[in-house]
Amino acid sequence: MSTQDVGAAEVPARIRDYLAMRLPEARDLVLDNLQRIAVGWSHETWLFDARWREGGETRTRGLCLRRDPGNALLRELSDLGEQFRVLQCLEATPLPTPRPYWYESDTAILGRPFLVMEKVPGTCPSPWGREGRAYYAAAAARGVLPASFTDTLATLHTLDWRAAGLEFLGVPAVGTDFAHREIAKWRAFIEQTDAPPDPLLTDLVCWLEANAPETTRLSLVHGAYRTGNLLIDDDRVSAVLDWELQVIGDPLYDVAYVLSDLNREGTELLSNVVARDTFFDRYEAATGITIDEDVCRYYHLLYAMRSAAFWLSASDLYARGASSDLRLARTAWSVPVVLERAARELGY
Amino acid sequence: MEHADLLERIAGTLRHDVGPAVADEYARTQAYMAAVVLGKLAAEMRAKAADAAADGADLDALFADLAVLAEGGPLPRALTGALEAAARERSDAHLSRLVEQLYTAREALGAQRFDALLGRVRQTLRARLARALAYSA
Image (cartoon, chains in turn cyan, green):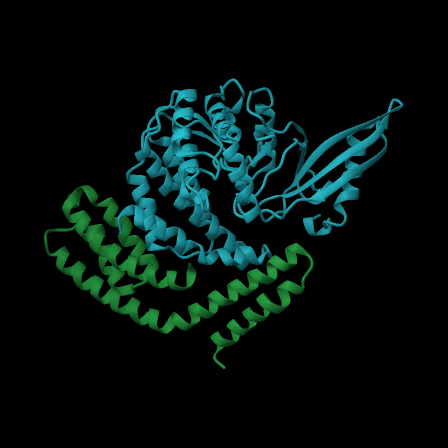
């Protein structure tokens, strides 16, 4: 059975049947406030409140279901089974994340693997639109969110990932192994596409290999820590979302992402919410990590390689007929834009 | 009507007539995205002949300059092979291979010579990128 066999119209009834199986004591189970949230690049996301009768009482539980569309931008790197396992590991840590309930790899249920997790209170405005920018600008002015954004990243980078059971993500050796692993991962990703070799991209990859920084401290790294991937409730981060790119590695990899001007639009505030000085002072004080801007510049170039890999993969998915989403076709023209940034950084 | 003009006209119809009339958000986004893709294709088609000529001239100059730079001392055999193949084949794959071989030979070349050779390749790549950005950005 493929995902086409279980189309969006069928999904709500299938979810209800699945929950009835998972909650055998539940009677009169219904799904309230069901919505499929804005189509993302990776997974289909459904939010709803399950309501049922049990032991003479009415019970409700807010839930979020993510289904693998089968042609996700990150292909096999975006593994819902791994996401579920990461969320399980993080449940007992101080990092705010949704509580995971169930993961199903059986495609007979919804046509594709899916996971069900807690619907955490909060909103997640897109930082790329006018409304989202206004939201973050107002929140930044109030002062609570900039601190929460920074503190949550510090919590992520100081949590005991070994104790949490996250070693299964792979632990780089001390030295340059982390950077080389990332380069190898994205190189393999690029090689999956039919894209011909690009000499400028080759130069970037060779430069990255020749200049890999030493990693002196290993943390859990989210890989895409920015507004838009964080749920905000009452000006505080209520959940860190989108566990698709996480690795054990250099915490400065996340810091570089925060510092990147790719993640802000029309503002000097990092990730649209926090002033640079505030972020530096607060993050360094909370983690004991000194932000090395040269290392961050290296990671900006690694992100350029990663972005090129994303866009080559996306346009390839469309070209191969694996997706009919025209946003993916459009990304073929994003590759030169990403490479131009890299070329400038490399001193072209 | 030129093909590029036709694509641009279709893009305009999608952007101004089809998109606004579509109620469903996803389908509307797709209509606008189709307009963007067709607009870029049209611009790329228009530039294709001139860009190909400029690419050819740039490669002529590149391999002439690299030949002069190569005379500055012996090159590792693999690099010489990659340079000869790139000059002969003129494909992106061969140019990529040349870049890889430059990095592999970095130590043997010494910093100054490596920078001179790679810098000359980058000059050509930069010019080509600028042409692509004219319709990509």
